[in-house]
Image 1: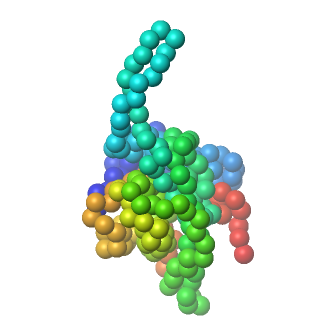
Image 2 (image 1 turned 90 degrees about the horizontal axis):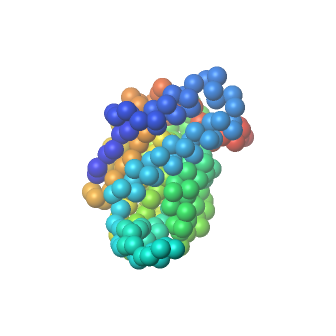
Image 3 (image 1 turned 120 degrees about the vertical axis):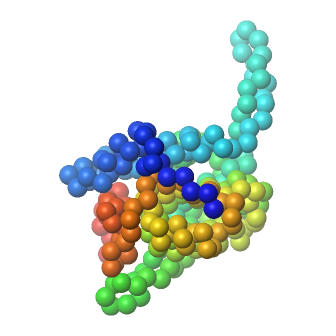
Length: 219
């Protein structure tokens, strides 16, 4: 699996990451959501450079020109609810004609101490992934369990031609989980890969619970 970590290079993504990590900045949900969306938009632009393009003849007021364009009907953009929604929207602003899929895959603590987690997949709405370029976006790649669950569920609809996985923050454990459970030709795109997780399986230093910071706390 190929891993692209944007924190290893200088780009405006690092500025957005500094802001979403900042406790004082996090008090404003609108600003937080906007930056998660902007990270998705920038990442989608970089990912677009790796996709396949075909020439299309365009008629202008003064003539015609052949322009290499992306066949967005071949794209399937999938996200994991609910934290993935603003990240997904950033990708959708770039790939605005892509097909879309939504997976409800979430983790639940399996012990009283909240140190062990299991993954529960409850709902999915998706067209067939057969023959498409599948892009799965989810802001947090902590244990990697929910991403693997989403990947397996989406591949059950049909074998895609290509798979990309995108996250805002990952961990070495999450990367290893993907390496062990997805195809070798998958590419992982991360804005940052942090050192690890605490005893409750939250990414450290991370920025907290992305879904709560975007939309408010849940029961």
